[in-house]
Image 1 (cartoon, rainbow, N blue to C red):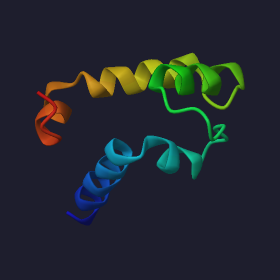
Image 2: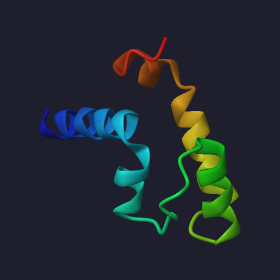
Image 3: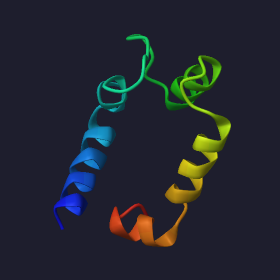
Image 4: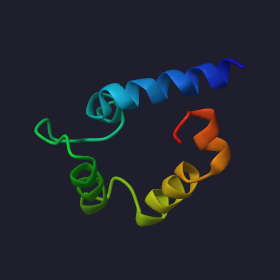
Length: 72
């Protein structure tokens, strides 16, 4: 149950300030705040792969995940 709480907390942080949360793990220029621009930067700089992005998009589109995070 603690993992679910931590995941929910991280999701809320991501919604409120995505750059701050992502900057804890990835090198993102401070002037970037557009999600597509950030993803492209992460891909171009080799910090993430297209496979990782695809996996995240599949996860995001999963009905159970959408229900868990009230994304509908």
